[in-house]
Amino acid sequence: MARDPVILPRGLTLHRLVSQAISAFDAHGDIVRLALPVPVFCLRNPDHIKAVAALTRKPAIMQNADWFMGSGIFNDLGGETWHAKRRTLAPLFGDDTTARHVGLLPDSLERMGSRWTRPVDLYAEMCRLVVCLTAHAGFSTWLNDVDLDWLTAAAKRAESMFVSPVPWWLPTSSNKRSRADKVRMVQMFGDFWLSASLPDAAPEAMSYFFGAHAMALTLFWGVRAAFMRPAVLGALRDDADGSYARMFLNEVLRLWPSFWGSLRSSDSIEFDGMDFPGRSVFAMIRVAAQRHPAYWPDPLRFDPERHAVRNSCPHAVMPFGLGPRMCVGRSLALAICTQAIRWIVQTFDMTIPPGDMPLRYGFGMYPALPLVAHALRIR
Ligand code: HEM
Image 1: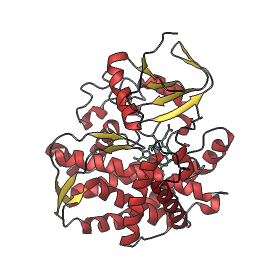
Image 2 (image 1 turned 90 degrees about the horizontal axis):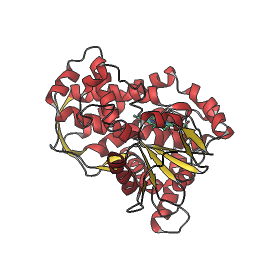
Image 3 (image 1 turned 30 degrees about the vertical axis):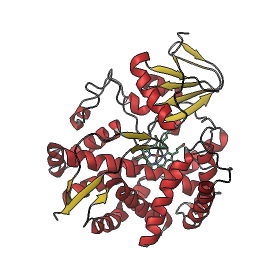
């Protein structure tokens, strides 16, 4: 087997590990091994990612997330228990579910728009929007302002805790707070719309809530991308049949997939003529694949039109994952994000500070700095 370069980690935060792997790809090629107690192979070639995505087993690395969310479909480590959940849940995320969420979206959008009379933190606003919608559509709850702010802040705290190096069972003050957050969330999520179809609904309600929360990132990167580029904004506003919006969203999800990557583990496995030992962990770094210069000319340029022609590789863009564990909420997310972005650009003008936004890799792919936007209602 052609051996892959081994990189000594320069720090153990997830952000540092992911950043280091991404910069190592350019210097060392498409497979980079991190020298950690278990062999971790970071992948950016879409074909390698496709080979590994066919595995359904996940490593038990994110133990804080597993503890907080419980063993719902999102955190189930694989095997027959995961298969059973997938068989039950996937059919429940069909057209009816999408239509119900889309039908309730205008209420959440209008509520958000009514707050935009002063400068706003754009990511925090997209989180509030998605939390408001998921509580309404998923848990039949129209949150009051206090509970909306609480749940939005609690989701943010939870996502930091999922990737914290401090294990959940240590009695630190922030772990005690996480425990209290979890108890209150489980109470709030009691009326999950799928409860009647599921033997154990609480962890699936968590999977739904945190899975759907990924939409806040797509909306943040999308709204920012639209208002920073007058030509793109004009094309979105003139887009009568939605065809430009589809390309636009594809490009947003290519450059800023809400989840930078996914993990898999396996017994020994072979692909592309290489053997990998048992207990290997694979980090499928989709953000690197989707910015791979061999598949995307001028990869960092934001250009929705590049999706008008077929890419040489059918899975060069994979924001919802690939293979059997691909996102169950994909259609729902595409419908909601498309409609929300179209409504925002038709209803508001927005001033966004110019310049690049640094990234922070955590549970998702976040803006590293707050972005304050000034919105003006035009309709
Ligand atoms: C733009 C928004 C979204 C993005 C980018 C996204 C992306 C992803 C990705 C990358 C995965 C993991 C695939 C893997 O491990 O290979 C995933 C899984 C999942 N997503 Fe989404 N997702 C989004 C929205 C949603 C929504 C709206 C829901 C629910 C309403 C949802 C529910 C789930 C669930 C339950 C899983 C676990 C599936 C399994 O392991 O079998 N996601 N999503």
